[in-house]
Image 1 (cartoon, rainbow, N blue to C red):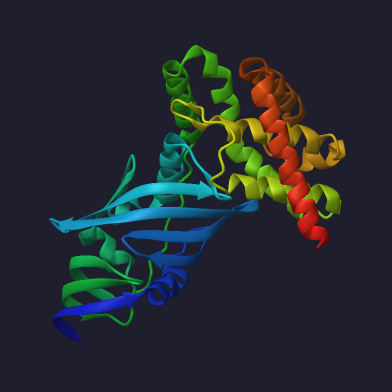
Image 2: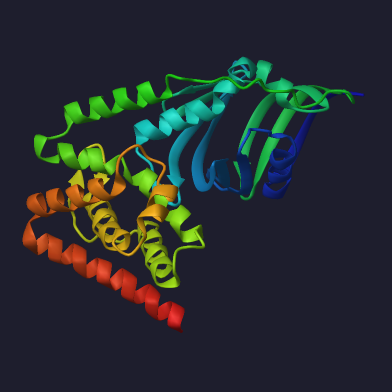
Length: 312
């Protein structure tokens, strides 16, 4: 069967179903797609542990049969990820699709539709237009040909031993640019995504008691909120209060958790107990007593609020 041209509307549910049925990336599970002017994709990426994520994309025009997507935001456990780390992570996930015309350049994903059409099962076609509608995509295509035997291709997985090297180069670049008074906080700030994953592991660990889990849930919920305790921003990194509260709250939590559980659930190379206490001492020294009081008050409020909610 061959159709010269067609226009179709794919709803969020249609696209989600297609993604779940045919987009096979090891460890990646798409759970929700929300289409407005910005496309929001929620899912889980499982690599030893399950990590929730949210990515926001902007859809560009098709030119010379190449479509451009803009990555506006990436969150893990609802914590915003640094741009440089975000770009490395997205590039890593999509690297095996390069031969299908999918390339990552900074915040942009360029898709060569002449090659990417191989990823569409059962059909060969040429896409000519894609536009976002409320809760849907309007797609125009031509030269549409149905091929019963065409399946989603097997994607060869490649190992990329350079990913850590790229991350360290990015970190060094950031450290070179930030004011000297913030250099150490930058180092601590770059551990926050790993700490959020750690909090998630502790929250799921059956050996952790309910009292600690309430504290963990409160800290994760705070990180998902837009509340600012301190107005200061660290150049190239972001809110100083997020970093401060993470380490001060983590310092309280770690004192209540047996060492063997910490060792089992922390996946980083650093000694998280030592790093946390060093961070608390350093942040105390640079912020001063008045700001530290605000941080500690906020932590008490976080833990108290979630304790009362659980009791009710």
